[in-house]
Image 1 (cartoon, one colour):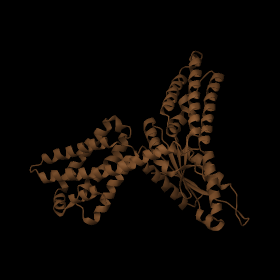
Image 2 (cartoon, rainbow, N blue to C red):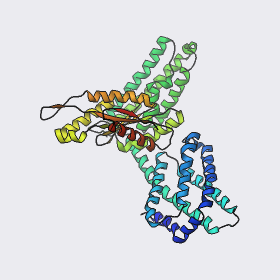
Image 3 (cartoon, one colour):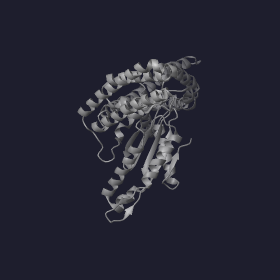
Image 4 (cartoon, rainbow, N blue to C red):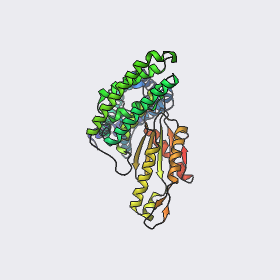
Length: 436
């Protein structure tokens, strides 16, 4: 147990537990006002407002914070303490996943303590020991939360750095060239039709927004490309009759972007190759850094992403009957189908064993369903040859959940996993969309 955990535990001595028990009615009456003040501060602070919506705060977060305050400010016996500490660790992990900086949480905690303090001072009989105890409990709870936050946040930052060199340099260089072609095709189509389509809706713009930023170390190249993407988007929204006057600027912007992409390709060739030899998909350790980015994008752009959990049905039976070599072949083929069927802006992960996780960017659950059904049907059409000369087939089950503005993306993962479980329960070889 961490030293700060022992200090936290000391607040729940028999005498302190008795005081907390006697004060429960008073404490619970003060919590709603403190919680409201807490979220009023977060919603009015630019750094935290981007993670929150009024609906999410009112429906989910206020009740969660109230439950947490009631929990830590209630008496606790020895056998309850491990669970109490584990809850503080979970909160620290959530803060790391949604990237809320600790100075903002500490500032908000001051608001909680201040409101509780003011409420206690208004009582006919002021109990100074209760005031001090509440402050100590909240201080040591925050210390435990922060300890796990720093540990998890450092790991996410570390994996984000590794991720930038995870793709095969040749593979990503080809992807860059594909995007350069996409750019030229957009301009050619616009010249033929005498009208440019909205550039922000192109695969290129979405690729820059979601994928390029986390796969390169050179922020100067990325920032330059992003600025020119914004400029092209602005031009593409102009009335069509101004196209002739803007054509020179448009061509120059595309030329500049192509140059920066060429520089990125050069950097990639020199990068260390870190490639999953079996499925060619991302390793699960990169999931947090990518989902953090996608969650921030979804909240900022008001465009949801969807998560899909895919599991190979009866995979243990494949290994037991046909051998692990054939099992690896199945994993490789399923990984290849996922990689080929996903859009260039999506992310496929080997989640563990025979399970895969797919992030479908700027994609609602119905669109995700169509993509995952293509994958499911293609897997079902495969024929595998075993050493016993008998062909065999495999199927997959899929669960989908659309991001619902809950800042902690683990909620979306959990719901996609529950949808996958429903597919399994309903006979396998099917895709299920999670419904609350």
